[in-house]
Amino acid sequence: MDFKLLLSISKTHLFSRKKQSLIAALGVTFGIGTYIIMMSFMTGLNGLLDGLILNRTPHIHLYNEMEPSIKQPLDLYLGYFGREKIIRSIKPKNTQERIHNAIPLLDFLNKQSYVRGATAQVKAQAFYLGGSTQLNGVLIGIDALREGVLYNLDQYIVEGSLQELDQSENGILLGAGVAKKLALKISDVVQIASSKGDVLPLKIVGLYQSGMSEIDNVQSYVTLKMAQRLMAQKDNYITDINIKLFDMEKAPALAKEMSEMFQINATDIQSANAQFETGSSIRTLISYAVSITLLIVAGFGIYNILNMLIYEKMNDIAILKATGFSGQDVKWIFISQALIIGLFGGFLGLLLGYGVTAIIDRTPFETEALPTIKTYPIDYELKYYVIGMVFALISTFFAGYFPSRKAEKIDPVDIIRGQ
Image: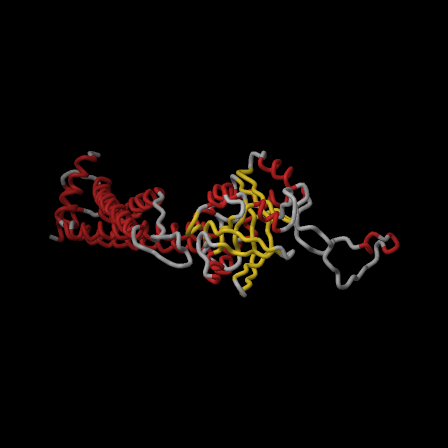
């Protein structure tokens, strides 16, 4: 079997029917191009939505929660042991919001090999005062620079910076919704009333916008020391510990282990965002289903074109077999034609997909909910281009294989007799 000769015959057949060959190649081109465009855009969109939720959500959140005691005093009385007990109107036990031994616990967690970083937070209920206006709010005391590294907090700052918050003891990173309601801007001073009645003036060093109005209308950030000062507490007062892991999939098991070990409430990221992750998986699945369908449709187009080409080339097939070419040779001639179409069409599809996604990536996308996003999100991941080309070659191979089997079985005597 002389593959060089077979390839030369394949090219001759393709160029003798340029229009049909071009249409078949374009079918592959648009199928691959559409696949790359859809997957790049949908993955970029999923990445954007994941970033809004997952980037700023700790993999494990440790905190104390007010809840009724599992064991009531009646359960400890031996006189009622083994009997059914009914207790009504159980009240939550008197527990502190602060985490016991939070500083040693932070040091322990940051030394673990599976922990990328553990940070402390202090959540304080407060009121924003503006003249006669009083707004409910939540102030979160943070280590500003550490939060920026682990949770990309700086990506949601529309004005100012985390560095200014870190360097300003009396600074506040104000929620954009609060700033709008009170008509405040950078460098203004906002009066904060704590839950204990103390009023402190804080300088606005930045504006924060998460894209979720229910958060932006109440939540702001201050330093840990300022939050502790608002709560009239000492430096070891910590209400929350957020943990970022190297492997997010280990979060559920580790959260359960930490809860039992430290006798504290622990929530993992999968439990906290179960509905969101389900939606993201469904969007990805739909994208793959639609894209693969497009590639299969392109493959059927190639099959029909090659099938018609075989009927048109009956005389050529008869001559090839009469001059010594075997049925196997004839089969590979048509398979090679299909692969050439797939290779050429797939390459054009890669160029088309990259070109269109590059245009989309530069298309302005402005929304008040996401001020830091300036263009449509695109993911230029190499695997989509590799998958597209591989699928193009596989689909065109089978599109050429089935018609070529007919050509392999053709009897040249029957064709010549028919002539």
